Amino acid sequence: MDLIPAIDVIAGEAVRLSQGAYDSKKVYASDPLEIAKQFEDHQIKRLHLVDLDGAKGKGIVNLRVLERIATHTSLVIDFGGGIKHTNDLKAAFESGASMVTCGSIAAKDPDLVHTWIETYGAKRLILGADARDGLIRTNGWIEESS
Image 1 (cartoon, rainbow, N blue to C red):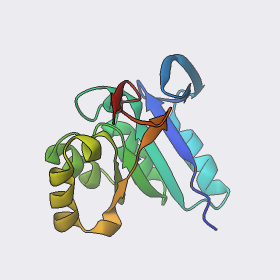
Image 2 (cartoon, rainbow, N blue to C red):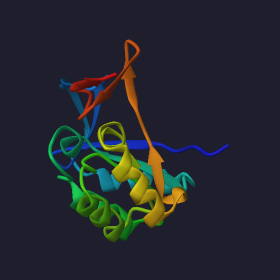
Image 3 (cartoon, rainbow, N blue to C red):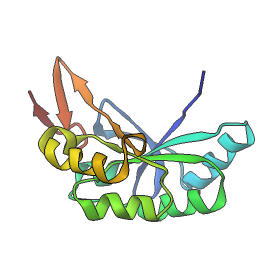
Image 4 (cartoon, one colour):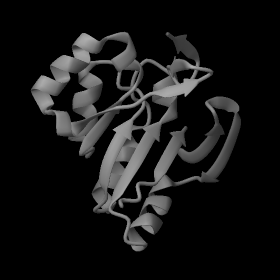
């Protein structure tokens, strides 16, 4: 069994939300790299890193956090949040993500995600979905999609 911890990021800080409620934000660390290093020190090999600002907005916001973790650890990083366009996907891969989770874009533009799978391969893309009350939630849990 693989243990894959997650770090959620808002404004460069490691945080936790309760079911996407941004007003429930609890800051766990001002520098997510420190948490990533702790995971690595405990023999963790993979990390799910989520840009919550990007998920809520129009593209990746916390790319520098991804770059720093990729540069200063050997963790295999699955990055998500803010992947709205092909340039976002490319930026995530170029900044050190081994895999990218496509959430909102998969619900809103499945043809584009299909093109990405053909271009980058199915092993580099993860389809992710947040759900509540039987509905898919997109854009950082803000919008409902049926």
